[in-house]
Amino acid sequence: MEGCYSSIDLVRAEPSHFINFGREVKGINPGNCTSEQLEDIKQALYQHEVLLFRDVVLTPEQQLKLTKAFDPDSEIYGHGGKLESEKSSILHSALHAIPRVPQVQLIGNGMIHNHEGLAETRLKHLTHKTFHKTIISPEDEVKGFTRFYRWHIDAALYDLSPPRVTTLYAVRVPEGPNQICRYDDGTGDELKVPLATTAFVSGQTMFQLLPSELKSVAVRANVKYAPHPYVWMAPAHAKSTGLGIESESLETPLEQLPSWVEDKIKIHPVLWKNPVSEALSFQVHPCCATEVLIKPLPPGASRENALYPDGAHLNELSEVRDLLYRMQRPAIAPSLVYPHKWNDKDLIIFHNRGVLHTVVGTLQPDQVRVYHQCNLAASEDPIGPSNEDIIKWA
Ligand SMILES: [Fe+2]
Image 1: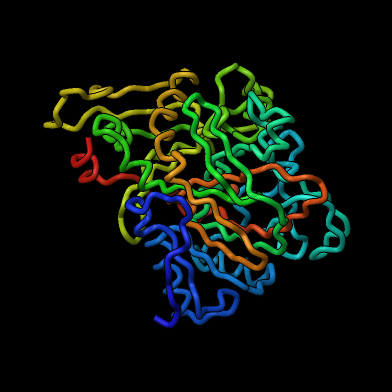
Image 2: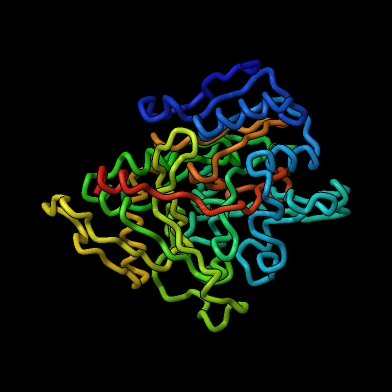
């Protein structure tokens, strides 16, 4: 192997959960590498979930080529094109396709002039203030308190398959002091974060942390997602941790969504199998979920303390959300979050089927942040647990 893979500096992170998580890659130019190097990068990504390259020069064309290497049959942007750019989508203000290479999106904050064919664009850093049910007070914001915006997987979750990887390239990183990300959920949890960090948690850890009765539910469960989930959720408000929606019946009624068909609704397993390590990751986008379908225990499994031993179909939003939150919240504890400290020209590739991530922080209009993000709707859906996995964990 020509590249050198060293641990990312994981500030404050709990070491036992991060032995395998995240590597910095040195000695490989990700924009122009050989097919052997690409193969190494792919293997390393699936082993370590997040790869960091520093001081990278990368055109949008090179970024698309690198992203596509993980799924050569993929073509279009992970959220498609037309529908998610509709004004009614919660993603509308955040994504600006680069005209030459529309699979690469310009994201960030502040006014941009003549950037990659975009004459003048106002970028808006996504902030909890437009999404959460409660917000940080102006006085506390001045003191540097902020929130996670929205924990998620990069995926349309309607019609298209979740991208395998996302590449995130920092063209320009805003300067400023660290902020304190507050959970505001009664736990007192908080996390010091670099300004405008991207925060990651491991889906494998999310599964491993569960008590056995919830592991059993996870391995037997599928999640059904809303049609056009980003239009559906747009009027709703998120929890203070950014990990799902408060149940206030504010979602767009199904009959008011852009046209949709049942066939294109996505049902995915709760656990997704890593193609290299075969480890199971808890991969649920909590904001987009509408139903949980749980299979009965397999024959011979112990029913002692079992939840939903005969299976269940949960379709009350509050019940669905309460169960998912109970399963996902432990994994976003401060010691389990990796908040990346970005520098200009950092490139991160993350395994979108093995981590959850979120934008964090609050930026002023003059704190300019310019990033290029690329992911591609996958050529096939993620693989769930095998029969052996179900027997092992149920
Ligand atoms: Fe994302």
